Length: 216
Ligand code: URA
Image 1 (tube, helix red, strand yellow):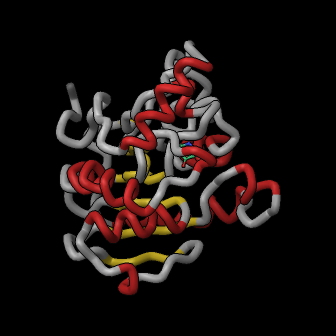
Image 2 (cartoon, protein in one colour):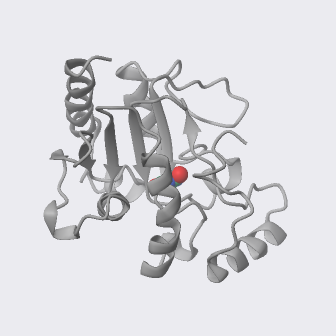
């Protein structure tokens, strides 16, 4: 498999999550209901890190933020800033191709109530760390939400206090990559107006200029 060291579809390391997925599969036999693989360009210099698959989105479709309200702003922004060939992500066979971008999650399995435990986030972190280790020089990591932000710091072995989470904050990582953080594009954040398209576009302007200034 393309990304065997940073993704394992057979992983059952978190008993609570594995058991939950087993039950979800019984209730929704057509759903993917397994760990969700990263999606996109294997040689990408932009790695987008979400939280975890959503029940009726990534967990159903098998692709991050796909068939999910949380994907609406994200995939639109990726298209607007030249990282994809279409503005929405509906299903595995929708023809979407990401260029120079890959999307992954801090936790690869659907957690009950969308809330992974601290231990689950820690256990899954080895996959994120392995994926980050494959990035080429001067990459950008976009963390969507505080949990993704903390997971990226953990993957680097950094203390959470070295970089406070905030919308549109950037942090120079020790290997020359840059962490850019954003409020998560969840339905809740969008509907409560914590995040809108203009705010996400500002983040993507920064990402674009970081990638372009460092020789794409
Ligand atoms: N879907 C994902 O894949 N990740 C998120 O963080 C939210 C929805």
